[in-house]
Image (tube, rainbow, N blue to C red; front, side, top):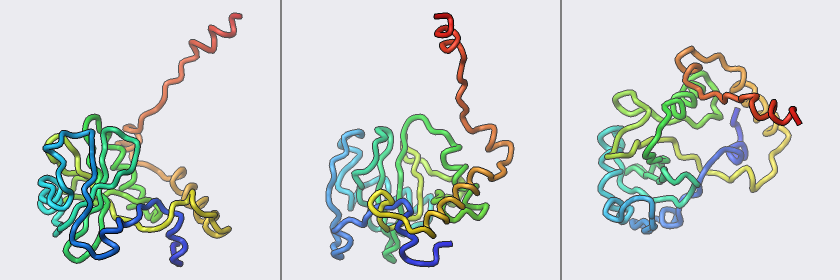
Length: 196
């Protein structure tokens, strides 16, 4: 479905940091205020992420760069590059964690919905690994342009609609379906207002 390079433009992505584009061996140091300073040090030699990626996922990771992205105070994201220069997107998540947040995208991707960027399984088959209080979730790194920054072509809109249809009409197994949170909308306040 993604036959042309321009098709990648509509997928979620992050730009490669300039330090990698220039071939520098050094990654920039980024402040990360949500975790103690002793836990986050220079991204090049950070003591936790690289060994976890090596042990849990079998990646020959040589560089991890913090990406100052996202609004979730319980998450941090990184670009991990292996010794063969292959990039991966790494998410560290602390606190509450709903397994459905990784299981559902993986299931949909496995059903052939290629537009879903699903987490990669660790060696033990889980969709995350543990690093102290953090879940480490590994994804493919997709480089491209943000869909908010460009206009989609007619064909891209059509492909997008077809993907959304496949997502919303997918048949889910009961264990997945039953773990999706559902809102319980009580009529209490609506009925209170109707009294007036």
